[in-house]
Image (cartoon, rainbow, N blue to C red; front, side, top):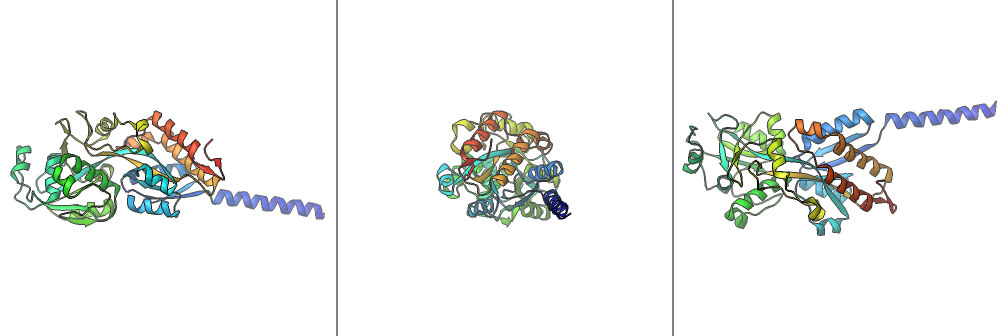
Length: 347
């Protein structure tokens, strides 16, 4: 009888352990870029439904994500500004591209419908330098002869936090404007000469929506979801292009991932008649040495699932999936670089 009670007790404990494991699935934490948040949130929701693995992603900006992964307070960081090899090595990190998208200028100009205004990189730089102050400036009118532009002051809106979206935006401005490159520079945060600052895509969007005559920049899926008026851009080839998956794909077409250390490809101002000029990849940052091999494996399984099964969801939000040959390179990096107790985490 005692033996039977002991067996029943063991079975009960085992059952409770199984139930606990089922009721409390592995959870993963990440933080960083606001740029890919629309697709990361969709992937996380779907993956939890399929596997029970919960992903808590904090959309706090690339600067915050980099700081948190370096501090070890999250399982992974996310940044739209790739780290250079030296910084990766110093922090014991690897990075890899997760998705490709585009940054778009958004406006609130009375009488101008979404997608009608055309800007060049030079005009955009001069607006953000404070050199062009009104919407009916001759330089803007010359590029938009078919539009009735108002005699209205331009209010520049930009990010107030450290942001990979800002990195992509300033990377583009630095490539097309010598004055921007020399006076302001490129970075996740810069000394803006003019404008009001909003935190995250949400803050920029809120200001643009509230302030008549304003211009800002946000991730394209965010602009679509919030029904914001985006502009068309004159690209490096001199062609007028609209933002969207095809023009983002065109910008990424010539990316040389295999020849770029740390996969640190920047896709701004790319050649090609169809290329959107402010495109970019968003990167995941993880530690090479993982403290918990099981949890690290669960994290990489999530990323693998996103690569293999998340492209349709990505395209619906106008993001571009990472090409299969690049995924193969990334997963080879996982196998050789990511370890727990000196054992590979990825099979």
